[in-house]
Image (cartoon, rainbow over all chains, first blue to last red; front, top):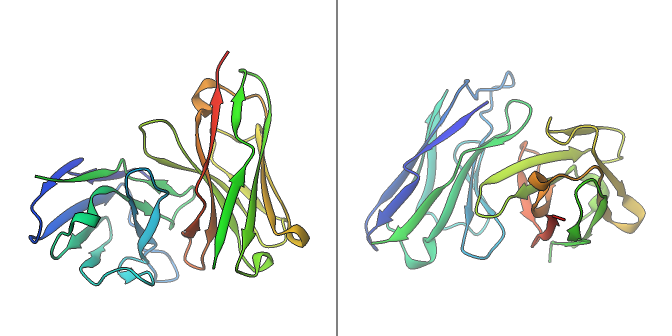
Length: 111
Length: 118
């Protein structure tokens, strides 16, 4: 399954919202009813960190300004108010179909 | 604290072998699937493969099938990645990660760097 993110570069303004799109080449709705779409954040020089799992569930410790949504083949990660610590690269990843595949990444930087 | 610490990276010639290790702590290692994920320099993430709780099932991405082997030692709370017939395109940071119950990786190590070059 090919995961396509847009944009690949996202200049943002602190305090304003931002969103990243992710599209899959096949529906990510599993036969068990779940949608195994995840979002990861990778800050400069750090390991990836999972933010969102199963489409819209925030991991422990993830600020509530991050939210995930979508269905089928179209998904979105939204940041309600960007903070300086949010700069980095964001990846979507699907776990519905084998093998797990990532999007190319979206680099979020401050304008 | 839940922690994963990789080791074993380094410089290896094309066609050579390397074994990576990942030491787990802070959780019941034997109850979780574990994954390896890699990231080539300046590139995105690629899932390499994973192993189930008791080591009886392993899955690999096509690009490493037959060359890489994932194994584990639950008594030592350790995960391994044996890499053979290494190629330049295997150059990457290799991350060990814990698989949650959601077909995803919820805890990541700091990574270990593998460079394949003559």
